[in-house]
Length: 456
Image (cartoon, rainbow, N blue to C red; front, side):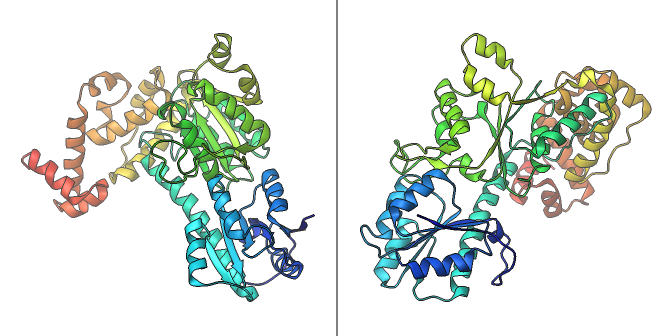
């Protein structure tokens, strides 16, 4: 039987932002050590469980998620080190601290090679174990934050990052109301609408208004990942699971732990993976590729599509049971052409954002230009409007990129637009190439090469 303590107020020790949210499993065959760790961590953590052997620990880990395991090495039966090696082979990627009263340098090295995040010698003081836990939780949080940041930086600059549910139309007001209602609940949501209508913006709003707002938001474009690797990308894999799997790797569900996973273009998910995703939604567990056991996860799923999912189900390209499991709460985004009163607020928001990004002054949007923008049908929706604003800033004049001149502006090649923009920023920097490169977000070497190509 496990010993469990839920978090209460009070307690001292090193301040750590992740400790009050942490779930910890203690595995030690000494009752005194279990009691000490439960008393120490109980007031400081969200949940603490303590068991005396790895069999009981495995049962708990099959049923619920733990951020951290504190594992004794010398126990009856197999050692903690042996069990740790098994955990890593089975795709358990979370932090493990190995504790022992009998240790030498070789054991410490083996522990680190097996995947222990830290190694603490008994007897230890309260401050020692709290510092070790803080280091582990901080490292895990930093790893997730770095991963999410790299994905955000690698995303298209013409994507939805930084946008909000902006608009004055009754339709967008209704969407804001629906988002506010659904945000506080763990319910799976399905967002539908044309490409560029703002599905990721809506998903981010659901996340940011939810109790999960301080945890990761991980967006995934299902259409952009090759079918043969998408399972590994989502669920992770263990070493040797397939050719080229030289080491174990966490999946996107792991990085979204406690937060939100946004699956865009869900209709493009391969049929073989649709059944596995359904099982994840039902059991709240994922199985890394090549692993023998499932890992509990706590992730809210939001899916989006510009396809008719019901039609995809009717022709057999999408599983009906997954469709009904996803379609618990639906938010439909009407196209921008059906809400022209939202064009102005969006255009002004894009102008403010993009001018700051490019380091150039914003352009005025006159009444004439605004009327033309509102009259244009925007087949690419908000994304096309954003591109139009960016093009206007690059060309240095809004008249060249308003709705009546969109066709003409599109005849410019990307290379021409790039050249004009880079030279404009260089001129604004007074010819200082180092400063211009900094504003452009490119290396000085890249700018020098471009200038040489243009005989500047």
